[in-house]
Image (cartoon, rainbow, N blue to C red; front, top):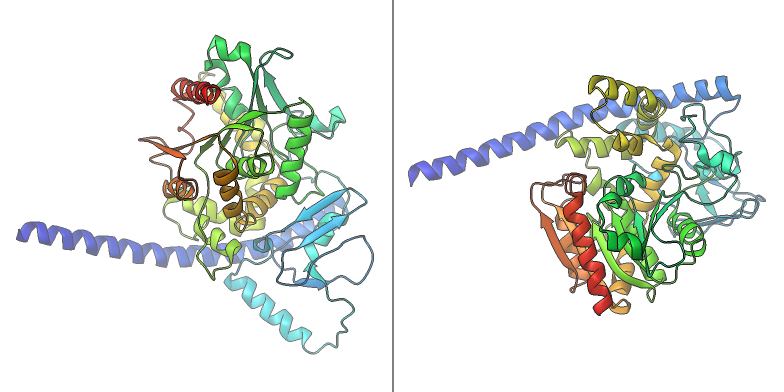
Length: 460
């Protein structure tokens, strides 16, 4: 008994020591990253001006500015949800996440303190009661010109030559005789190849002959358009899917299969078209209930990006979410040079490993990834409850949730959180699988599971 008690105490002490060490190291590392991102802000301003002859707006140092007149921009009062309408490009931006321009850090707080102190000595006049972050206005005003730090290959820019203002959709199955349609929505920094290279080849002959499989590249990713003047809000993503899939393929009723961030888009579409959904299958849905009194967007940002060096996935998410310029540097090194990394991978493995996941991971711009991460993952925090309630009360279809037991990106608790809002939802935890291997590596088994779900929907 004493041995067991001592062992328990030792484990608790080691766990506490590890937590303290993680906190201390994390504080030091992120203080350094705060400073590095601060410096990179000025570096990129100089380089952007040197290469493109104009300054590029960023969110790290801009304060909220007052809109005086013109530009067809309408925004709400401060501290309320913001709606921006730019009629010149038919662009609407709804509920822009404040995490884009409000990410507290030591360097940011210090710089804002200095700026505010200087502003106190200046006389200002108030000409408008409407406020919005100045960077958002600049993003909406600037021309649609690809940035020098984005990839210029044919795959990443195939949308520029097609002259189509629609998303890329990979469609398989009968064109005219399809009995049912299935919409596949990928997750963050991914593309339709996540489905087409894994599930599509493993569906049965019956499914391939009776179902029309529609895998879409969401706005800003894969082969879809990557406009530089877009803020990649939920409205834009959903409307582009409706235009490019539901309208273009004349889809009336359909099944949805979505992964990670795609689950948010799937829920928004399901809530908007409750009578059209035949089944809803979600993989690792990122749903974190927000406690009462907590700022929803900020709470979600800290849940998915806790500014910790351990575990590794939390560190990666923190860097991607908190640091605009460091994440741009990563995109510059990895995404712009993805053809080089694919060549190196094929050379080292002697072309024995398929690189579709690498292509999927790299085929996006920093502008698309940055805004999608904040405006979809963080910005929809206040909407997900209503979407889930709509699915629970207005949809009669089967809801199935799959989650990898070893998923370190989105914890398993998120799926059970969804189940609490939709009691009839079935949660299936797949042991020894993570955020990616929930599909990759078990595509045959998952394809069969999907076929069973779709078959049951016919009997309901």
